[in-house]
Image (cartoon, rainbow, N blue to C red):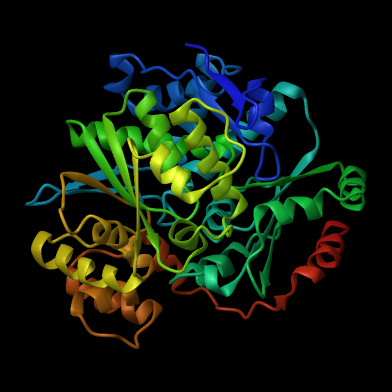
Length: 447
């Protein structure tokens, strides 16, 4: 099988190297011509499955190189006690717990794979420059900081509205590494706007003088999708039988990963996606407002082209819903509707879910078909929300106090990450405007 990469607007063929270099600021590129992996791979070990995913999307990798990268990332992320699992319930539902990873989300495998793939690419090209990674997704930032190699630098941007639960402590902990710099912004900055800033001649010259390269990371890059594709293949195969996926999303990367996993042989029949009310994605599908983030727009465009096999020049909410109906159902859900689902999962199923999985449960609550619900975030990351949902009562407890009470309620051990964060000093991040980013960035790069 040889993968084909096509531009979404013209269906023009591009090389794998060019496809992997695309970002939210580039013309969207879709992967096509995927066929199911061999049965012995699908039902074999994790290393071989992950390496097969790698060589499918990056055919320049040899099998041996892919196996080496896969083994390294699996060892970095998982352990005998921490694995992706599928929790059975006494109903038709199953919960895929994707978050049993070091920083309590499913982004760790993506970050580890990306960094290991980047190191391989530098060795292949004899590239001696040192990378400076930039990102504006807090969850991805935290994962990148955890696995960041010593010779790389990481610059992160986040806004308070993007932070949930223990993530403020995790971001503070990331600063323990001297090569990490974080900026709190008045409002979120898109990956597209961030890339346009660092692509200015001044920054490129500054990086070249330092023998560095500036790399903006976002969740539409193929190298960051591979971990999700592997995880969804693993849990859907473990769930047995044809599987309908239910999930929440903020950029459609997990939905696109589910489609690619299906094409590679995962028994995924369809996806129901829950969009949190009043978010840009929800407004786009409810009112047709052109408020999509650049990453979500790219991933949606890829889905449209892949499922229709037709070029896509612009995104229309009504047309998307119709074009993707055979695979995707979109539902806008009030965040308050998630709280009863947290309580119901705990009381009826003895399973603890966080707000992301609860939102997906709310989306399928009316008919509750046989579904595999994706839980990408550890419930302990937002203990106050989970506690309020279980007890049906608002709580003024936050962070460690809420986590301690939650531990007593659900009788489940806290993740190791929270224990490590307990001694972390919480600092106040100064707030910057988007206009100040260029000067701050230049000053830090010039150190």
